[in-house]
Amino acid sequence: MLITQNNPSFEVFVQDQPYVRLNPGAGVFNVESPGNLVLDKHSTVSRSTLGKYFGLGCFSYVTNSRIGRYCTFGSRVSIGAFSHPTDWLSIHEFQYRGTQNVFGESIVDEGVNLAPKNPTTEIGNDVWIGDNACIRFGTKIGDGAVIGMGAVVVADVPPYAIVVGSPARVLRYRFEADVIAELLELKWWEFDISELKGIDFQDVRGAIAEIRRRKGL
Image 1: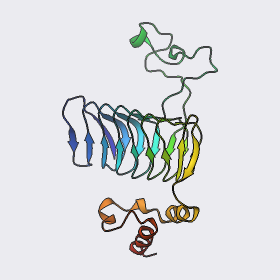
Image 2: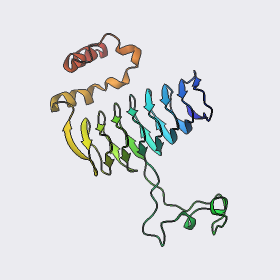
Image 3: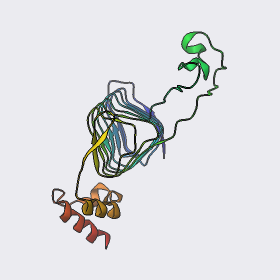
Image 4: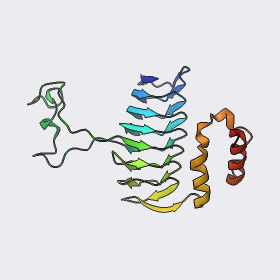
């Protein structure tokens, strides 16, 4: 379902079908999603596809991205932002789009945009991105990955890796290799929240066994 909704007011906006919660100043624009998403104050998501149970912290910006289910991103996060071409005469936007309404002068007609297209950023399921992290456009982040606070991600991130730093590097993995393989095969995130009731999530191997039972595997 395509969702476009802006909440410039000082009140929380809640929509039931699909469920969308926007805190003051937050907005979604041309977003494809089944719903069950929440944006905190003054955050924006545009031209993206969001999986179910998506949460975004304050003052964050996400664009031109495909994001899986059960993803939670922190505050002041930037994902998929446009990068000005560096091999043109200038880095300035006057070269490729109309700027009459911005600077009072233009050499390009209004509505025309000659800027190069940046590739889509792809983020898997069950991904956590910490406060102040930046994800370069076109990056692929695997299922279960964790992006540390303030990390600058300019290369693909493997599933279940924890990356930190600038540029981001793999610090460690969340689980042992055999557990990661089982989780990737199991795709537990295909369940809705209500279907996961009664599982002991602190016992990862036990949780895997129970989900396998519920899936009839």
